[in-house]
Length: 543
Image (cartoon, rainbow, N blue to C red; front, side, top):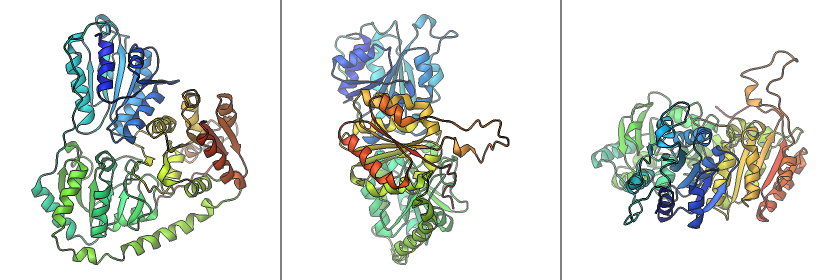
């Protein structure tokens, strides 16, 4: 068996059924021979984004894989790998490499050397007989520990080498760890004794599938819950104890409860400081439960650290708390009423934007109508960078686990389209939506053609305000001579030219009907793009 066929064989044994790719890489043909579906994209970054969502929607059980050519293909892929690394997403990246004799010389791009700081594990295949151990290492890294991209670079002159005839790939197992029982005991005592605790839940809840355990803790101890953007949908946001999601934009209960808390329990979060996450107020008692010990006391000082899988951590914590004095929890029985009152006051203040019936259309009105319209049990939605992220995060109510793909650390424009397509391949029965702006579509819009060509019927909702509106307060233009943030385009026509469903909406009274037509198009197997002509809304909820 040749090296490139052996890699495809290992992928098949690991349950991988889709390969995202950009030519030219011989792995594409090797995968196709094994009935691994190949999805060819228009640019490398989109393929990585699709692999990203594919892994997330399966909580890392199915691994998204992307391959590309050596040199420029690997160079173009850099941003997508970096995004997956920042969001802690397990994907396998398999670039071709320059022949070994020239791999380390300028100007040849060496993926192993250049991507080692944006991957969890990066390794070249130096000889055919090394493939068995390399594939074993790669998949073990993908399935264990903190999730992240793993890269295997395959030099062109190695692809045709032979691997050992007796090799049989054994799929990687997942090994889990649990926190020290003594630390659990301390954490339980601190939590039971807190007057105003708040749970801050992150993406680790999704990877561990710890949704029920999280709900049990919140309900048994009357603890309000907020989530990071990546953790959004880990706790149902229609639950009486939900504060909503916290990012750069958030609902009023999020910041109010965090500021007034005496204890914050971080579950499955890194507490990484980022411009797109809600900051933890100083002076609070912190219990930090994370899979990665490198997170502890990195950005936020913790009083107690619980290292391990989020499900095992919550199971241990719930068990320890079952015999604790619950008088403090009993005193918080009116917490849902307080949360609801705060939410109602906040929503009333935002009602003029959420119900705005003027043209150009206000993007908050579109978010509100979409939020009311779709079946939350059968949807996966994601945002893009910039304004769409800040507009949708507080006002989209996620009620089902993994129904929202949240992100925001490196905030690359155009990320949402690939995520929606990858989500649709992972969850073909669900309505998969990306919400983006006219700046984002300039980065990755050509790959709407990929959705059409590959029969991936997503719903793409575009806010077109003919400007990079989020930049206006940052870099105002003082003269009429130069308007560098003004952009243009008719993207509904672009969608139709690609063979998809495209519609431009200018009348607020047509929002709901247009959404229904777009959804219907996806149900008929057609990728749909709804272009809403919106105002230059720059206000976000950040109170």
